[in-house]
Image (cartoon, rainbow, N blue to C red; front, side, top):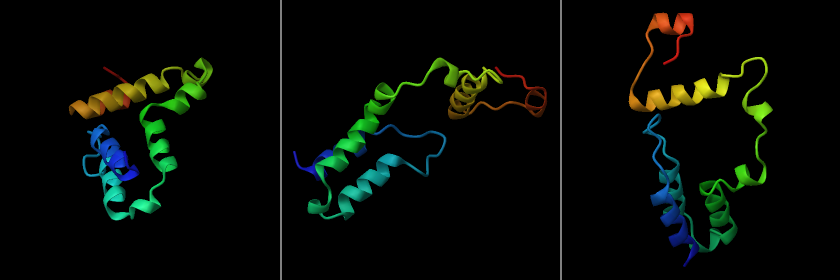
Amino acid sequence: MSTVKALKRLASAWPKDPIRPHLQFGELLQYIAESTPADKISARTVGAVKALEDNELMKKYPISPKMRAPASFPQHYDRLVLGHKNAALGKRRSFLQVLFGVYK
């Protein structure tokens, strides 16, 4: 498979970002595949995108539990993920919930 075809396949399979619908990584990959000459797209480039898709760096360099739950605010990343999921679903917290730090 040529590198252009491989990059286009990865671009079409890239998940959509519901938070920023106007800014999609898959569209950037598609643009690169279409506008760049075929001899300029290397197998290394396609391999890097494939590594991003497969989370290879997360597997190679795992994050310790201490890093995921810092002692000063252990719920920080859990709340961040919850906020991202709720934003993707269109759910919002009221002003009072934000003011008093209430998370659902």
